[in-house]
Image (tube, rainbow, N blue to C red):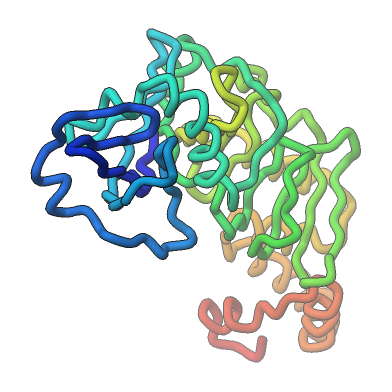
Length: 303
């Protein structure tokens, strides 16, 4: 699932070694030789020994965390075989695992939900596990299914929110367009109570869930379903086309990046005898976006 670096505190006394709550008469020389005599890394997690009165050294260890679906458990491993029993000891699992999970996920978005992510779901969608999907800061053209998703600090030109309401849009303080689209855009085969959002530009769906095995562990999953994403896009296109919104072609361009929508709009304006420059200024003003570069890249004209 993911790898986390921690400092293993090693105690020394009476020709014995202490790690966690365990006592050893010997440990690998490579561990001793590569241990630090001090550890002033405030941001690094330390797996401390029970007896803090002993002399200590610190070994930096990469801990690999695995979620075993078939056995329905969580495993901790490392490339240093000696530490594997330590990582799966009762002391580590009961007293340190929660701290490790909380530290790893402290900067990620988490929803307070335990979703039914079972073997059938995994076999059907074959998701990738823990790709730091919750740290994504750019969400342009994401359809947001989970209304608990806080997107105020994210970067985007426009996003699409699922709602009971019909198609609408508004501009926020960051001059980003927030679209509202009805629930019917979600295909029946997609379990929308599982999915948090989809990137329409890549066709990748995302979800997270607190693990039922440990509520400090967040399961981050993503999987590509380009066909379903295309169906959603087509539904949104149809909804916009059927709307009475005077900027529908601009909204369609925002969604698809297909310049034909802008070309069609400009052709209609030109045939109507309206002043193109005045019209475009109004578009830029109302949508809080300047499309001049897109227009100049496609047309050699007065636009």
